[in-house]
Length: 261
Image (cartoon, rainbow, N blue to C red; front, side, top):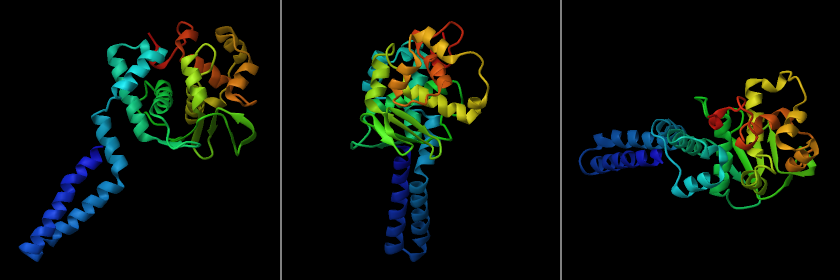
């Protein structure tokens, strides 16, 4: 990371000051003081420094994750070369700007981090600000889980707005990616909900019957979607929004984000 590289000359500057003050003149002690301050500042603000640098000099995903997206993400496959590069770079930035917290295993696998980050990027693809200010913590379980808000329901995704944390089951995320006609993309679904809270869209009145539209596009009933998520209470408008990011379910003129032609 850039902040770590930046710390090397700052550390060397401090060592030089230590040497000069010891071997030449004590007046060089100012270099030690300044160096320590700069090293400490660089350490404390390393996330902000890294974000500043990499928004101007974007990183790309490693070759394995590029291949992963090319094989399995239908929306990514439809992009042109320039947008594919931008999409991958925004995934790398999103991963950097969010905290992935494993539950039930030692770490969140790289491909799961990419699946989640790609979903968030799809929802905010055309926006300058990539991060969701109301959600920077991502908890990932291997399989379905209960939670304090839903203790009796083992579910596969949840947006807990009070703590600004989104929760996922990794196996369900992979099903949504690998079998998109049979399973809802839960990461896109939850980030649609998170985006709606930011914009206030969840409070708007939506005419018509969302479940009728969902069924006409996907063949899924409300009960089937409830089973996919694992909760009885489902945000039907977010479901409808989520399937608009899935190329197989798009209706001409309704898609948004990177899946547009």
